[in-house]
Structure formats: C-alpha cells, structure tokens
Length: 84
Image (cartoon, rainbow, N blue to C red; front, side):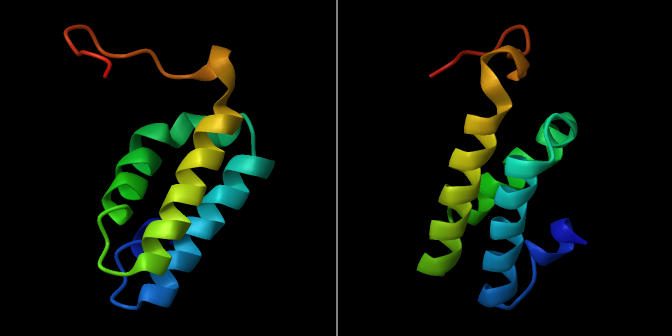
C-alpha cells in the first residue's frame, strides 16, 4: 500500500507515503530495516519528484530511515561496488 502511494499521481499522496515511511522508520525498528532494498530506491526516486513537497518529504524520510538504522544495522555494500 505504501509503495503504491509513492507512485500515485497525486503529490499529496506521494508526500504522505514519504512521511509514513519516516514514521515507520522511527517506530518500527528493527523490522523496517529488513525492507531497505525496497524502501531506499523509492525514497531516492521521490527526491527527483516534480513537487517540492514530495522532495522535502522524501528527504526527511530518507534522513530518518538512515538515522534509525544505526551503525551496526546498515546494510553492507555489495562486492564490487564503490561507496561515494
């Protein structure tokens, strides 16, 4: 449901999806970290949205998600990838 909202034609729904992900990251640890492979690409895509409100919501959610992951729980980069 959240993933579908992130691609909705309404900027209000897309922004709400981003904000919901930030709340999930804040209150549903460590379970939400298990979904990082689905969540992070959606948030990164929303950072390129045409709506400033959606971009702001995505930035806030991304910050919260990474912050809540904690140093020990951050996913390890795949072999052969470079960290920037």
